[in-house]
Amino acid sequence: MSISSQNADALAERLSHSGLRATPQREVVYNVLLKKRDHPTADEVFARVKSELPTISLATVYNCLETLVQCELVRAVNFERGPTRYCPNLRPHAHFHDEHTGKTHDIDLPADLLDKVSSVLPQGYDAKSVEIIFRGKTAPH
Amino acid sequence: MSISSQNADALAERLSHSGLRATPQREVVYNVLLKKRDHPTADEVFARVKSELPTISLATVYNCLETLVQCELVRAVNFERGPTRYCPNLRPHAHFHDEHTGKTHDIDLPADLLDKVSSVLPQGYDAKSVEIIFRGKTAPH
DNA sequence: GCGATAATTAGAACTATTCCAAACTTAGGC
DNA sequence: GCCTAAGTTTGGAATAGTTCTAATTATCGC
Image 1 (cartoon, rainbow over the protein chains, first blue to last red):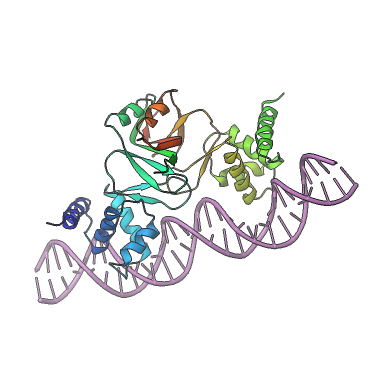
Image 2 (cartoon, chains in turn brown, blue, orange, cyan):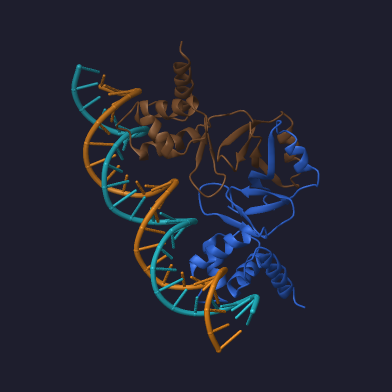
């Protein structure tokens, strides 16, 4: 079984779990995200998907991305004003935004860190998710 | 000396430090942010400022907010797609976004937490700032 | 006060996203 | 296998938030 059809299966399962259907558009959008994990915008996903599905519309790309976010297969990320970016990394991780290159890197987090961070919340605050964003520069290489 | 003129002095100093001028518009925008710290959008700031400066334009509000961010008197915050929000709290703090009310709360952070969080960065990553966003719900009250 | 520079203004332009209504697809019941 | 209902896609129009532009106005140092 190819990696891609494994993904397709996982996707189909998550979708049907929510009463949704597996469609070629959804599969291709998801595979595009998995293939190049550079936090693309909807427009960038659109461009990449077109080579496989030339007739897909931008509205569909937005729909598919939204669906994947709902299914929790993909995270939508907003660092600053500007287009939303999409990230298929489901492990607990932070984002490092390099202000020189504009690139975003995933930073894996040790298992206990999010708990430690959440422990600063006062009584009565119930966090469902925690997002950590670093901004700065990376060493020349 | 009134609180407001203290702010005005602090603002004027920061501005001239960057070769910028103190203007009524910049002062009023800054005071509006300090007065009601509910993370308003540019539109909301515009509405509030109008009562004092009825002829101010929305473009000027955007300019002033941008200037204040440059001077590091104000932080711009983007939780998700949607308008940028502005926060005059300069202490180290996280944001808690209540998904029910839509409101955003500041969560003060212990002095060492940001260092602790930053210590997860691999060699070669040099973070200039760290942002922490919680999402969830707050207790009924 | 004068000139140079900076800031403000209104409106047009632009970008990212959502909405809409029509066409198409799919799954399941017969 | 066909029909129907529901879900999905599509292109274009509409919207929201922000930035740009060119003209006017204000401010600072001299």
